[in-house]
Length: 236
Image (cartoon, rainbow, N blue to C red):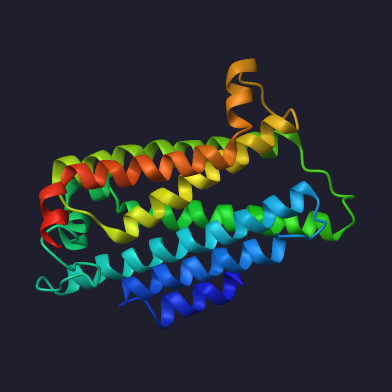
C-alpha cells in the first residue's frame, strides 16, 4: 500500500493537494482497519506504521521538490498548494528558510523519509524471517535520533512558516503531522523494549503515545487557527 500510494500521489495527484490529503487519510484508515483485530507482533505493527508514515512524508518531499524546480525554471510559477492569501506554498518554498543548510530542505525530506520507509521495510523483512533477525539496540537508537532531529527541525520550520513568513504550506503541515507521529511511536517502542531510558517520568509519559499524537495535532491546529483567526472566521 505505501508504494502504491507513492505512485498515485506523485504521478497522478501531485497538483491536487486536497486529493493528496484524501489519499493519505485513506492509507492511514486502511492501515488501522487491517491492524484492528490482527494478532501482530509489536515490531510488525510498528513497521507497518513506519512504512505508511514514511511513504506519506516521502511523497510530500517529492512533490515539494518538483514545485521548487518548477519555480526555478519558471519565475511566474505558482505552486499547486497556493490556494489563498494565507494558504500559500510558493512564498514558503522561495524563502531563505527553505534552504536552511545551504540547499533545499526538500533534499533532507527525500533522504530522511526514504530512510524511514527503508527502516519500516527492514522491520517487516525481519518479521518475515520469523523474528530470527534481531536488530541491534544501536539501530533503534539511530532511527530514533534521526526522527527526533527531523521533529526538532519541523518545530523550527513550523515557527518560521507560520509566524515569520506568515504563510501556511499544506504539504509542510502534512510533514509536521507525520514526523511528530513517527517520533511518539518510535520513542514509545524504544522505551518499552529498553533500547533507551529517559528516566522514569519521561518513560511513563512516552507510554501515552496516542494521547501525545492527538495532543500534538491539536496544538498545531490551535496555533494555526490563532495565527490567522480573523481569516478563518471570515470564511464563514
